[in-house]
Image (tube, rainbow, N blue to C red; front, side, top):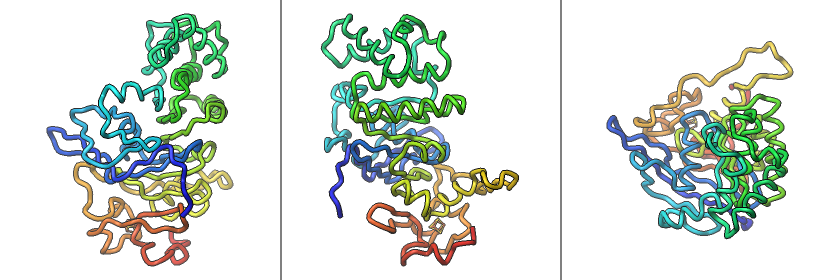
Length: 334
Ligand code: SF4
């Protein structure tokens, strides 16, 4: 196997939310590999555990009720699960930054945008207030906002501009890893495309490795190198963009693609995946997708599937593939 240059390596991560009504299994032996300088798309439905995975990397799971039960999160080879809170404070925003979906809640309405970017810089770098403000202006320009607008308040900016400000804050200290949680979901489609394009350019400029959390396969196609598909807290398929988009293996991944509109046949009915995600406080014993899967076999009800590899990178967790590639036998059924 070729040596990978990993920025992030998560193994066997188990995260629970322990509530009065039961234990929610948010991440179940979750794994992730983000290569240096690359963009990994973490794709799945709402409630699949995507945001919990991002927050875990920064150790920002609300505790209680959240508990990281076990596993390993390594960033540039350093284990984050054993770091003190003080050490994590230095890491957040400096080494690893996160952009959230809603720019309105990420910005403070009573401070100018320039002050908010400068605050993040002053927190991590030994600079004077004047230097921090000057760098904040540079960052605004880097995200396509004239520096003079730094004196304005968040409410004076449109949604797309606010998200640009949030990205400027996240990149202000040149983090080596950026986690973007649905960064364009709250934006209009045309603005989405502009923000994605800008993120691509900035990622290159600052040599950042990007974990893009999204439910949108269109966004993944636009910007990602690799893709991990998450279902009920477990990565059920992983591979390069080409592997996953051109050779999807898991019935859930295929269902995601089948539920997209067909541009060649716009009147064709959408084929949503039937059923709902299982209750995370009462997951099925075997494969979590079993209640929705039209290929379920008796073994699927009782045993969790292991990894089956299609090539060095591309793997799937599905019993269909345990004895080789079942795809040929199944094609046309979905
Ligand atoms: Fe379907 Fe079984 Fe594969 Fe799960 S393991 S996706 S139930 S065929």
